Length: 216
Image (cartoon, rainbow, N blue to C red):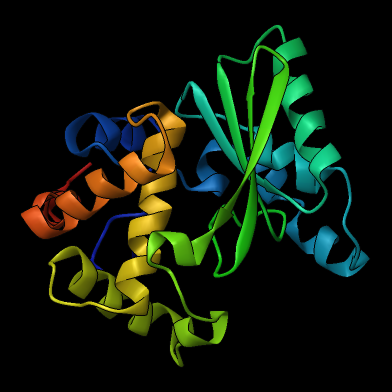
């Protein structure tokens, strides 16, 4: 989708870091920052089953971020990740926020989603009922035919404030959880207010323009 939007994605780690500094958003291309794991892709495809690599690769932190976003299927897995970061002598992560769903997909889907928040090895969890935050529809309502092209077009419309409805509500709520995760809002509701302000006030569109014009 980023390629469809005209955003540079084949970046060296230092270039990704510069993107973060210049734009406030950075894309890290795994084959460039973690080639050892990327080189295993063919073998993993031939094995056809999940291995420990599926978990290990999600713990990489090339941006040196102090918040880790992830996902889990069963809540004890979230606690295991929180404990891992707490016990690590190298990790710089202070806060872990994980969403219940398919592992590897750190987004809020329509319906009920459990969120686990971990700090200093302690975990609290709560449930988001998406209709309470304006996201009152089914997952099928977010379906597209051409994933890359349609997603890019919809993203551009939402960020420009030119689109309302299911996609705009999904973007706003997922942005809200990230605002909350970073500690810039005391709860998801406050994060949602900030997210909607960014979408309607032009800040989100400005960030997309900056991404498109970024040159490594």
